[in-house]
Image (tube, rainbow, N blue to C red; front, side):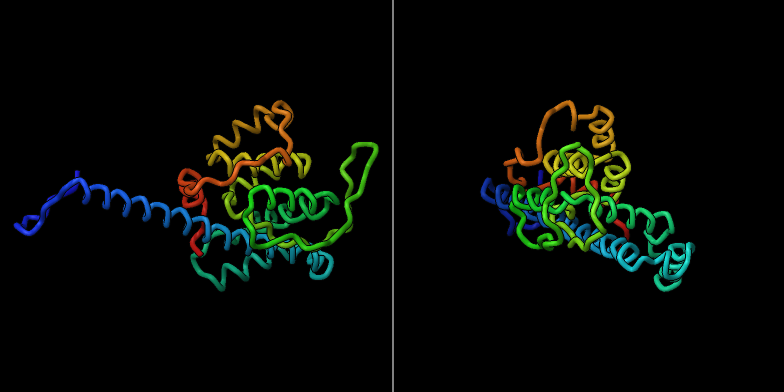
Length: 230
């Protein structure tokens, strides 16, 4: 029930109540969109830093302790900012490398983008699709991949859990899609991965035709819990 202003000039009716519900709905929707936008910017930064560490061959050029040095420099420059631990920087490198090394990642990421109809950033054309009759994961020289827009709908902690727990890009993108589709919490994602839904459900990435709902409130809440101060 709305709080009543002590004034003779206020007359509340059903139309007012409906209007107030609409205002609250729009505000919650704006919160969700803002959370996703901030999360996407964070992830873009993480993706690009991981890419730099890989493509610049940082350890070969500056020594095996360079990641720790980058961590110290960023912490010194941005006092109180979170997310610059050496472990987190190693995770950024691992995250980028996981996708960039698989020759089929480009195609699968493009299919994910297309199926979600997100528009925006697209993967750069970096390599032709390769075939492997033996069923093995084909690796390519590490190429530059642009940040997939769909990743912005998934919190950082989820991405790391997915990369650590999956053997292939196809499996990882299955859980990325699952997280977006169902607004999975970190615990919910862990349950899905423990149940090995990728192999047991038989769902292929290209079978996903649902569009994102207007509001991803549950996922936005997870993003707010996971997002660092920017």
